[in-house]
Each structure stands twice: as structure tokens, then as C-alpha cells.
Image (cartoon, rainbow, N blue to C red):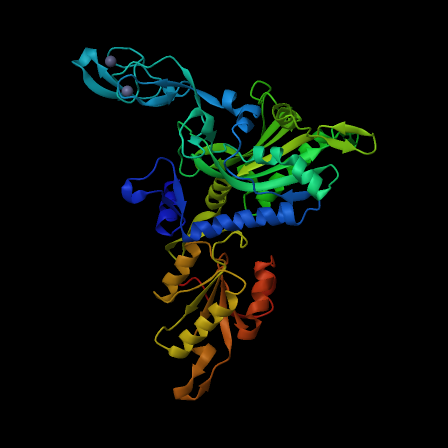
Length: 494
Ligand SMILES: [Zn+2]
Ligand SMILES: [Zn+2]
């Protein structure tokens, strides 16, 4: 994890928020390369799930909603953690986690010397176990109290109870309250889904582990509505679709680079299920911090639509033409965190390799996710014609892809830099490309393309560059491309 955090900062992926002021608790900013990576994750998700599916539509609901939404959803009453407060230093802890951190102890058996003792252990001098505040070691803790995780705010200029509302803790409710709008305007038949990508906010008491758990985060959520009266393959439609979504979601993460052995499915036990859920399965990823939730796929039944119908007084039903009756659809909810997905993709892509006795750090990101697709590098930056050609290539390719020009170091160093941020291909322009007028040599009009993963190089005519990259970045394997062009020696950059 330390290697990822350090790379992220050094290479412009992720910065601590408000760093010059000492940072803001568990808030992170995406830098120039981080924002590209994040946009790419969201773009392929939207393309695969919304654009390419006939049974899906998009939505972008506002973050601030009518406060009754959160009454109806159960968040006002139930979205809480039991907390204890220190009466001395005022720090707040989750009641169920307070014994999971090392604790500070002023030991009476050693004239009040201060010790920091491992989580859950008694003092080896006096034998007491922790009862006081684990941080300051002095204060009594209050009995547990329920603490709501929603961020409160006020609509309008007056800070009074009537204007109290919340930053949404999930994007899902924006979809539920728009169910009828989408149904009426788009005239779809069940089953269909509504997808949304957007920010959500939770005032977590113990956030951390880099971007794994943050107070402000982005979700990619789908509410997939099914007719509970229907069956598919002899099974209730909701159960069938739940399985389909689990398989689809798992396959999606694998397609963009997460390795099979780092992914697993975990079913929620009956006592762990949210009260509205019929079944929930988490896709877990083997993060640097251990196996943790990457996304959840829940069968929320008809709970949300029924709750909003009850609180709003509006019918949120679907008319089943075949059976001539109104039904409240069941909903399957595949819900993924963008930030968490980004962390998983980064972690899985990160490699430290040895190339000719030197360490090479490489992000083997899927080309569709890589922040930069191509780097154009002039072999000699003192030669005007080489530099001009390189700029022209960058200008041309950047009409379609994010492409960078770099001449700030020797070629070996430039390759390493691109490897480290996951750029799949480098293009170098050299004397051979442009020729040497002084010597009367004519250029061959070809450039070198170097592949990040194999470090192989091929010579490609300038006028084929566009079509070659269209194939490579469209998913063609390097090996099949390399076979069609002249090979060039070593691209290790050593
Ligand atoms: Zn304290
Ligand atoms: Zn002691």
C-alpha cells in the first residue's frame, strides 16, 4: 500500500486533500493522471452497462434531496453506528472497534509511566485491561450512543430544523424517487435498469486505508427492476437476475484487469443482511489491506419503492399488461465504488520487475483504463525536424486519445516514466525517421512503437500510426500486430 500511495503522489494520481493546510481527514484529490484513470473507469462502465445494453437507462440525480427521502429510506433512523466519546479529550470511537486499536495506559504499578499496549492485551505490569480512552489514556468513555453517518446541512439561508437536509449517503434513492418519471417518459417494459454514477457522503468515524474508505466517494450504481410475478428458467425473476448480475459484475472486473485469484464472492449471512434485503453477495478483492468489499449486489425486493409510495402518497407501480394488474417491481442493486475500483485496478496493475539488473516499476493497466495511451518521445531534442515530427504525431493522435509529448530526459528514463504510469505504448522519432539532410540521407518515414508489457519494438510507417493504434487500443493483441511489422532491437531502455 505504501508503494501505491507514494507512486500516486509522485506521479500525479492522488493527492491528499488540502495538503498545504495539513490535509483534510480522509479526503483525497485526483491529480492529472488520477482523474484520467477515474474517468476511464466510469466511461467504460457507462459504455458497457448503459450504452451497450438495450435494457438500461442512465440518470443523474441531484445530491441534495427532499429530507423525507431519508426518512422513507430508513437512513434517518437506521443509518447509525454505536459510538462512545471520551469525556477528557472528546475523541469519538466506534463502540465495537474501540478494543481493536492499541491503547495508552498510565500504569499505577510503575509510578504512572506511560505505555502503549497492543489491542486487546492487558498491561503486563499491573494486569488491568483497557477501560479508559485508548488515545489519551485518561478519560472515561460514555455509554454507546447511536451516531448518524449522514452529513447534515441546511437548504436556504436559515439554519433551522425545517431546512435541515443531508448530503446523500448513496445514489440509489435518486433512482427510486425517479422510478415513475423514467417509466412514464421512456415507456420500458420490465425488466429494465437505471444506472447512475455520482458522489455520495458518509461521515465515517474510522475512515482510512488511503482511498478505500473515505467520507466523500463516488458510486456506480444500478437499480435493475424485475417483475416479481415472472419466472425465468423456472426460477423467480429476481433470483435469476440476481445471479446474472453477480456473474456480469465479476466478469467486468476481470475484463479490465483484476486477476482471478484476487477476486472472490462472499454471501451475506442471514444475520448480516440489511432488513430489506432478500439476499446480498459481495465481490471481494484482495486489497493490500486484505480481503475487502469491492462491490455489493443486493436483492432489495420491493422495499424502497413501497417505502417511497407510502411516504409520498404516489403510486410507484408497474402495470403488467399480461396479467392486467399493478405490481411493485423487485430490484437488484449492483453497487460499486469508483474509488475502490480504482484502488483495486492500481493494486493489481502494480509490478516491480527486474530488467537487466535494474528495477522497473510498471503499471500493467488495461489499455482502456490507462490514463495516457501513447507517449511520443523524440530521440534527439536538439534536432528541430525530429522534435517537429514528434509534435505533429502527438497533435494528430491526440484527436482520438490522451497522448503526451516528453523530451525532458534521455530515452531510457522516459520509458521508465511511462511504464510507471501505465502508458501502454511509446512512439519514438529518431534520425532514421526524418533522415539527415546534411549527409544527404532521406528518412524512412517510420517510427518505433514500444510495447509497455513486453518492451518489444516495431517500426511502423507514419501514415499507419492511426490505424495501428486504433487496433491496439481497440483490443488487438500486441503479438499479432508485431508480426506484421519490422522488429526493432531492444526496448528495455537500458
Ligand atoms: Zn481521551
Ligand atoms: Zn499497568
